[in-house]
Length: 166
Ligand SMILES: CC(C)(COP(=O)(O)OP(=O)(O)OC[C@H]1O[C@@H](n2cnc3c(N)ncnc32)[C@H](O)[C@@H]1OP(=O)(O)O)[C@@H](O)C(=O)NCCC(=O)NCCS
Image (cartoon, rainbow, N blue to C red; front, top):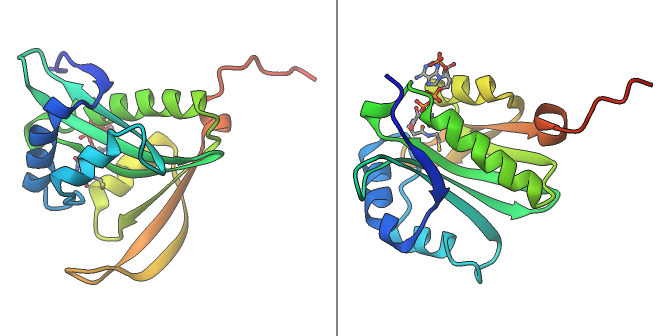
């Protein structure tokens, strides 16, 4: 059953659960709590948008996503969903909400890097419309591994403008 969630901005009270969620997921980037704290600070550069998927119970966080913005480009830096709530559409809803915010911030293109072995994430990103645009050999450490570069043109994929019939 799809969980009842609210997608909202990450706040200081989310930092502990978000750090714990990432720590429990081996494929997720393991940022420190202070890295997430920087991500929600509107004064920090680059500017970031950080969202959480909050569950019904107070303090319950099912997932989160962070993107850094350098319009017209943005980088999806991390997206993660707690193991027990995966494959229920939470990641997709998080990304759709993020994409709407990125478009409003004049972002046309979203880029990301993902470990070549992270097959679930590769399929997830392809489902969202990302396409592979390159490889960065040996980009990751512990273990050393290639990064797959992916890109999503937001204008083509998520345009809400009426189609020009001419
Ligand atoms: C990648 C991740 C965020 C996806 O979140 P999610 O909430 O499980 O994804 P969704 O349920 O929205 O999936 C949407 C679609 O993506 C595809 N997909 C997602 N996970 C998949 C998997 N494990 N295997 C194959 N396809 C998958 C499917 O097409 C899915 O639709 P379906 O379930 O109707 O078939 C989640 O698996 C995760 O947190 N992984 C660990 C952290 C990570 O690797 N993050 C990415 C690198 S930062």
